[in-house]
Length: 245
Image 1: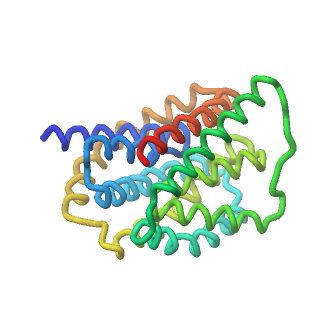
Image 2: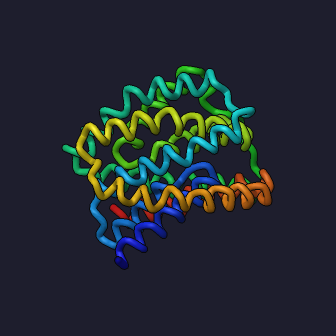
């Protein structure tokens, strides 16, 4: 019973983080679920499903800020990346990959925070539309393997200097599309069990409280502060990911 309560609380906390910041639920929940020794494949399936569910109201809320051409290119790249991620989690030692990603997040987030507080600005990077496909490919790999398909898009969006609202819209639309691919691939790979359905039956009704709460918090955070929080979260998530590895 205690394990069940902890899993539900962790999942709801992840949904709150995702609603407020637009990404990051897997990087919060997966290390916490690992700390309580919850089954890895069940965790991956549960968080993947919840990410898809939370993406729907987010995509509806920010639909006016969605650049569908960018989303189409990102999703196309993810189509190629999803099966690669499934192979990674099944056959490759993931410790090295997770540690590399975690160190990158810590370094990139810290670098961006330092530039902000020193009032340095930089030009947008990766202006070619082809880079959208590469970002989508990486997102698909990380999504199917670790439910972390949002982090590559957040890093990519900050490099391209997308406005905060545009980043939110693109993120949620991308989550919705790629989430279907990720959840389907995880189901085909055998990650889904009766336990996943039982947990979803408990957690999903509680999202009716968590999502409005997250939206209320979002409305009270300025865009300037949101950018700082996003970079800070990248550092925190990088540390959590490193500890998980």
